[in-house]
Amino acid sequence: MGKKFAALIACMFAAVLFALPATARAATPTEILVGGQDILATSDYTIVCGQGQATYDKATNTLTLENVKINYQQDETDNTKGAIRFDGDLNIELVGKNSITSATCGIMSAGAGSLTITGEADDSLTVDAVYFGIGSADGARNVTISGAYVDVDVDLRSPFIGTGIQAGGQLSIVDGATVDVSGSTSETLPVVGNGGVSIVGSNVSARVLADGAYGSGVIVSDGDVVIDGSKVEVSTTATYNFGIRAGNDLTPSEGTIHIKNNSRVNATSGDGMALFTMLGDIQIEDSNVTATSSGHDAVYAIGDILIAGAANVTASGPYPALVATGSIVLDPQGAHIDVWSGDAEGDADKIVGSPFTEKVTLGTSSGNYFHCAPHAHEFTEQIADDAHLASGATCTEAASYYLSCSCGEMGTDTFSSGDSLGHDWGEPAWSWSDDHTELVATFTCANDPTHTEVLTAKPTASVQAEPSCTEPGTMLYSATVELGGERYEATATAEIPATGHDFVDGTCVTCGAEDPDYVEPEKGAAAIPATGDANTLFSAAPALAGATAVAAGTLLRRRR
Image (cartoon, rainbow, N blue to C red):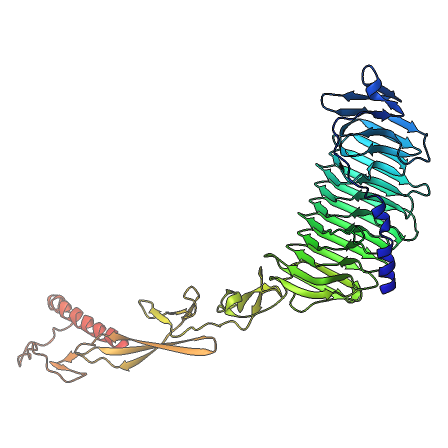
């Protein structure tokens, strides 16, 4: 491991070759060679290139490439020449589809100055070149690619190496640009910004297409590498080749890698680090990063590694996936972050404390597999306490509680726990029909007054007290209902009317009471008329009728 790392550091001398001394900053170009012809020397600042043309606007210092096709096969052994070559500052505006094929450099900027390449999303430039695809190693040369689509394939020719896009100063890829860069051998560097690399709101895909020894990297800077709201993919299989490298201890220089604002970065290295800082920190903030190495640590910082916010980071390799000479720090910044670590993805476990909500130091190295991600709630925990209560137990249902996550967050789904309360009926309210032939028992549950049961019963009747001639009697009614295994009984009484006296010859035959209105017949009163005496018979009829009525009344009273 130590020998590999020493060899890796030694191989970084290649980057230094590109860091030429800065010269005085230039302004207006003194020459702009397009296909070997100086456009400044033409009468109308126009050069026909295939079916398109290159035009120069001196007022804005803009070279417009409109559907140009440049095939430059000269100066193949001279890495200071190019299909387009200029000094000073220059703006290149792309219109339509443009292509450059060169036996030497593609777009070569000599000396100090700024190169800006702009275009709309449909405008493109394809460069197939040797040595430099686009740019310059001059330390005062800044390069900006804005908006357009740029595709660069670069090769090398001994004794020189090749770079796809290089700024000796600051390299900026911004404003929705799409950049695709390929290096054909291990000694080619697809993307280089010696003074720093800034990728903002854009897409960059870069790769080294060949195996080999001691390459320097795919995206390389002696300063900082900032990836802001962008999608970046880098890959290399070259020996000890970095995916993204910031900082150089041979110059010396410090450099950090800062990936932020929902960027998505996928970096793969065959036998080197996918992300590496020589003298600086690696910071991943609110972004998705996958770093893989098949022969080394995936992420290595001579400094600290800070993973902040809602970052999703996966790193893996045959050695510890994350290594920091300082500390590996996780700062959720209000998020919930789970962390897994292990020898491989299949046996990685959540580390103690996951999910983390507060800033924590994870040590200086991880397992060979490391993964952290915003916590995804899994509402499977069943905790039956007041804090999780959704609804209390009822007469018929057990209490329900909200399912919760291992992080403590409660969900909306529920589970049941415990027993139902059951009904607490208590004594019913009784209601008798007017004639006491039906009894209604209404039960109300003490646990829930909306729960009621109504039962009916046919009462039985018995005489509790017989009526007398002058006093009423009492009828006793009783009924029984059953609910929940319990029997409930109710009774009621009703008055039996007094029978009244049954007088015979002035005396009540029931109680012996004397009839105060009784008048004893006089002795010697006329006998009942003989049969056949019509007048006498009719005069006696009313008296007989009255006796019959008295007898009938007595009989009815007795039936009661």
